[in-house]
Length: 300
Length: 300
Image (cartoon, rainbow over all chains, first blue to last red):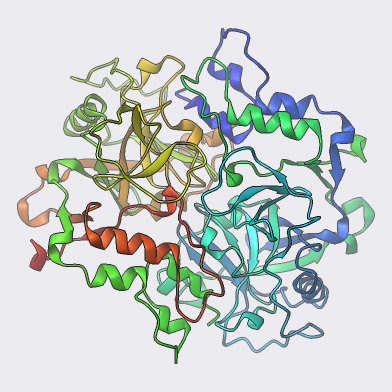
């Protein structure tokens, strides 16, 4: 099997599969995660997790960035709990750009109990934000790295979450205060960094991304589906905190202040093992997304 | 329709759709392309174009990077003309990473008339390569930009093509000379820049990318399909230069030495119009891919 061993980049930790017998290599990024102490992993709060079930039975789980866009996230929790997304659809899949979901214009379902005109929660003060910067340059910002497990960038004065693959933002019209969280999108291609600080980032997909990305692309302008028949229905969206304790999926995110995170970053930037001729020696912010893992019972 | 107007990023040039009535804005990236003189567009040679027809009837057209990986590209032309890819399959779809095609291990079809052990055409001398560098920093290289319409980077001494979305590379085993072009992959997520200078880049998809990216992800290691039933067949691959003149699709690429390219880059880095609150003021190499267009008869 020609495995293009660098698929290992995806973090499957199968270096030896590509290189048997291989010279003893430094630990791979996955080796470093596997060896991390339990203390390097932080539980994700159940009230920051949403499980979306699609008509095909597949589920997509996303984490909310409550700390960074509190008003938009409060809207999402309210919309989920009021059932607004139960029966919503995937409206748009634009290749290499975004998947967008919500309710189509002709659907007049009222969004009850939300802030209709949230403030533009696009960035926040850089001072005290706790950015762990990558040691490599960013094309768009003075520095880029991670804040509490989220990809972020800063110009010194302000900091903001970055539109990397899988990040979730709030669609809006022209006026900045028109993004009420009733329509959300996630990034499915090269990070559209020009959206940073222009739309509110409210979360990221942590499981089931492939059930959004593998959809047929819409043939209308901007990848919108032209007919209702093309739209996949979202059967339900639920807050994990509202599920019976036994049914709650649990996830953990690597502590970005841990030594494990730093070692993982450098191993990812300097791939070793028999396959690599020349390690990159660097990593861009959207190739350095903080690892998330499913928590096993043992870890809970 | 909540259009997340920044879908315009994809170059559809529909800014006014998002902003009617809008204040008079500077030209959009698409406006600049639409206004470009014919002289700003260069024809892509028919012998550098391959049309791949999938079992579902969709076609994928890719351009060969003959100048940068001549031995690997000569192999591809020979494999196409000898019918090697007629009946090959999509072997692997790994979410956010690559789609890989060729023949599975159990298929012993001989690849006739190719160089079985091509040199590692991973980079080339930077001097005289004609890199048009972007004025913004790159996370991985001293400079990044375009060489004759291809995304490229340089460390000063050497230059190389970059693994951006849609770029095509040659899968290999551990030994660098095992990439004979019988299995190819294209990038479908955030640019895996760690692959740069570790695999040969031989082309890019210029039409039909969505028919590769929208496939179900493989559930085997590295996104390989576990069963033959999951693999979509490639009915045929043909050199456009071997098609009857009347049937040849024709494409043009923007001259990266033209003023249009420079204006387009800066417009893309500084989005204007009513939607944008804060232009990025920068562009990374994989968001600056040289525009390609279908040539109309009038242009030929």
